[in-house]
Image (tube, rainbow, N blue to C red; front, side, top):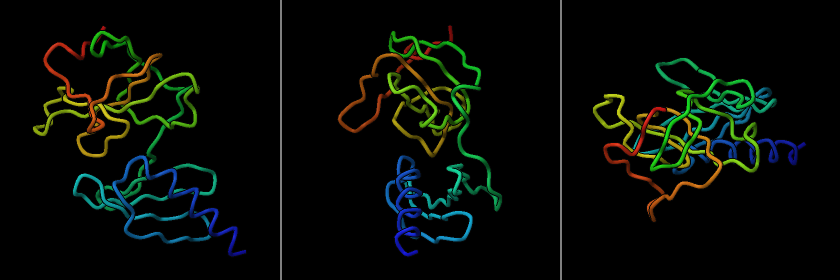
Length: 154
């Protein structure tokens, strides 16, 4: 029994760690594991259900975090000259083909809707998800900072 709970917790933590800097608290329940963590200075709460679905808490309510790549509609964009699929929604990594690369885009701190950076995961100022056939060149800080004209809708 304890091994089953430990395995559920480990899987849930692995799933949300792509969003978090670190975990503050983990609480297993019969139907889900609730994880509280910190990202970019903010404290966030996630629930990972036994079926793998992931929900994040905003304004006191929980919202589904990720959509299925296979059913989402994408728009073509160019990022630093590399053509990518773009969605303004979060995409579940487990649904993306293994030979594709997934990134998330953030807008500027003024939330003007202008893409400013690309990372493997974005929590604050999330703008959308990128899927590419080739890897994007992230800096040593894990960020691709975007200048004017480096993110174009095609």
